[in-house]
Length: 429
Image 1 (cartoon, helix red, strand yellow):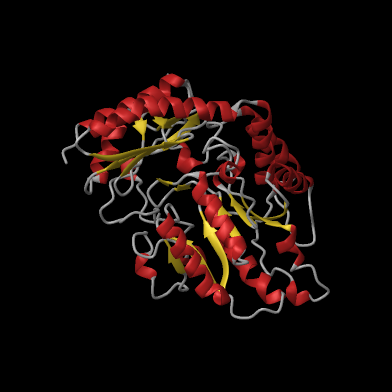
Image 2 (cartoon, one colour; image 1 turned 60 degrees about the horizontal axis):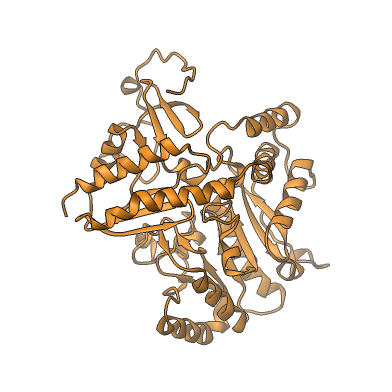
């Protein structure tokens, strides 16, 4: 057991369960009391009652280096002592300058211009705004819509919601409120490729951009597609002169087995979105990165052609320090080799579940393992069962998935896999 100091808590959680907190994706009237986390270490979450849970999802896919990595902790502490925050309007600082330069080197092609924000949803909002204004700054009117893909998810803010699957996604009830976008199936076969080509042609005059999650549509159901599908989307976007936005908020930083998923398809998008693992799961930070061609449309003597966006905490020095430390770890520790080892372990452990009566599919890519169940499982019961097994796994819809820290110990991953196999095998159809 990991030894972590736990502070005294004189008031029991049940006695001080707040009526003031509104929790994510939760029907508050029906929700079970949340578990109280008091410490983290490596791949473990330590609860107030001193139980330890092996984290199978790295806190929504962010903690790629595990929790409390000493290098990131030291970098944030040093930055905190010097300058925790300063506004980015009219000022700059070394952590942001260094991080932007390093991302420009790591990202493919000429993705050289980095706009920092503070969440993945806002990174997508900025990308959509960039795409629309790209055309306006070039004197082209009417290009205000985006082409997105069914099964996709890009965030919870209004513009990002509009690019999520309009029928199957969690935001379908807002269809009359969000901007109306254009949706296609991912071009996984010749028929859907032809349909995408035709849709781009017929709507070209009103489209500002195409947006896609590369290789894996995460919150849409861990839906996976081969690199060739992404390459087809990029090729058709170029044919019709449409900027391509690649949303790597989930897939970036080693999750799919390469540092960025678009590398596997040899694709250089016009705009790329990053967040989640950018700071190693330590602090809120996101980035929208554009090519020189996109940036050049904003380079003008006309102040009205500037990108009029500026989150208060953009390029927060603490978060940038954490992100720089995270990039250090990708340079000095074998994260991609660890992702490959996780893929092999997930494959060996989860593939046998294909024979289980309750299982419709098993999908594995990089350090992502997803088990799709038949029907609509009792999610509350599933989540409670995982906790009873000493693991933190949070199914959604009909998907049970594992996205552990890339540093997870083999024994811990074995325990996660055993929990998934044991619980899923016991489900009735």
